[in-house]
Image 1 (cartoon, one colour):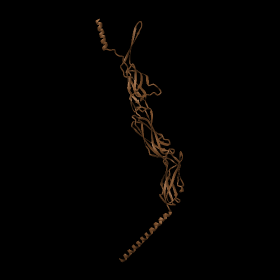
Image 2 (tube, one colour):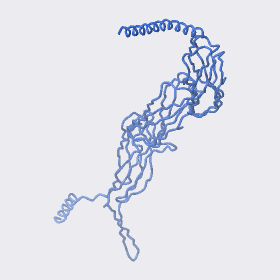
Image 3 (cartoon, rainbow, N blue to C red):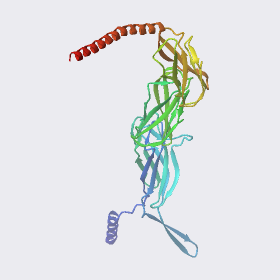
Image 4 (cartoon, rainbow, N blue to C red):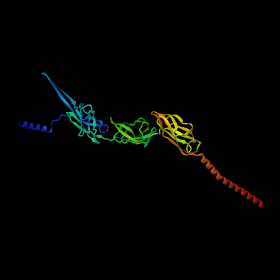
Length: 420
């Protein structure tokens, strides 16, 4: 009896100091993650990509199979490593600012991902979406992993949301003439914390010809400035007065398309597409004489005009040759000099304004330039003769006096010689 009691006590202490070894359980961990795009905008979609690894490289399990028959008994022992069986992966968030993207499916988790052996890993991408009302801050949705007969994992992933985009500034003249080629310079600034891609500038205004038709930029890094310029020519159909020229900036944040707009206020004036410039004419002329006039005609438009002709607009003006000056077709930048000889017989005495215009044809039909005005002072013939006579009468007494003085000097010199 004493021996049995001693054995019981020894067994008790053995169980106390050497407890049974618990069954090994697989352990997984998220060893790496990536958010794309780096910073989302409200309403953007993206992905959280995580790398999941079975961190247990030593645990194994042993299974013994015993076979009995009437004549013998046999047993087989098999040892295998413990695999981590991933049952589900889901996204959990206390805020609705970042959620699992459910487009085309109502599921919000992955099932039966598979088993990972010791040291093995798998990469999984979770689709996410930033709510359109999401505020600018960092969210921490949790990636939850449930492992069969193992330790479950909850891992917070930082996801940034920023509503800032691009800023556009413009340098343009305050007024632009119809048909005249003008350069507009634009500056695009990326104010975001991450790069944007596929950036391009697209003109939006109808009735205006742009060169180039669009400006491709590509990738812009954070806080980077990119300059672009367009040559524009406003068509005759475009409204005059206060107006706007508009540009659109298109870009991608990750796989999400975004747009920003730039409106440039300008005053549209008419008539400088084909211009007349007075290059040679007399400021004053005697009435009845012929006056030679030269007018430079220049095409400042971005397109060719046809059938250009310089015509006088002053009523009753006598043109000795020609009565009008035909130029014909004018390409952009062409300059021609129109020459006229004017008979001033029937112009009024004093200041005369002589008006000329260019008429030409474009895609919208016949057009006219602004008026080019020359100022000519016509002096009457009688006034000229009177001035001549009066100036001649004043000259004669002076000549007579000079002659008398000369004769007196000669006589005085002769007398002195005789006395000597």
